[in-house]
Image 1: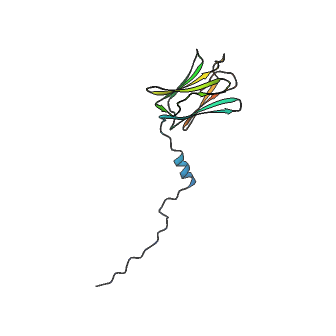
Image 2: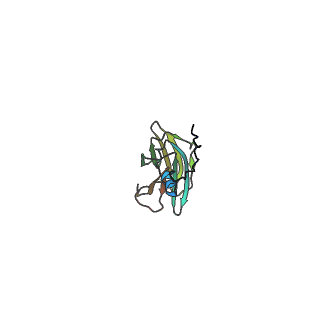
Image 3: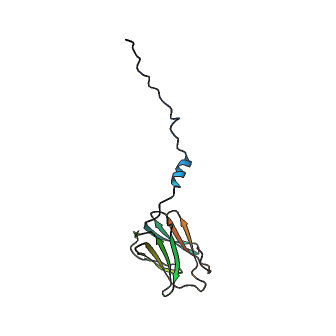
Length: 148
């Protein structure tokens, strides 16, 4: 019988293993979020002369409608497909135009209502900024027509 030498253990370099780079982690971080189904928080913030309110969700706010109502004056943001909210209480604010924010849940949407002190003659000066898991409603200090 011929003796067969035991197999040698060969250490293999990690040349075959993909190395992670900073770009890889950025690529993973930039994967699109799923559509939001829940409001996580509402965060007011003063930004110089403007007053911002961020609606934070558990995903992207892909589908929303914004409109104003009179008697009493309100700005309404309907978040279609968002069916729940961790925000249960009204938020009383000290903004120049907004006095309260409240959330209502409906069968097919969450409704965020901004109770306003008044509606300026040229319309509510606001801007909507959509970013990953949040929708920012900026109430602009300069009078003018609303933008979206």
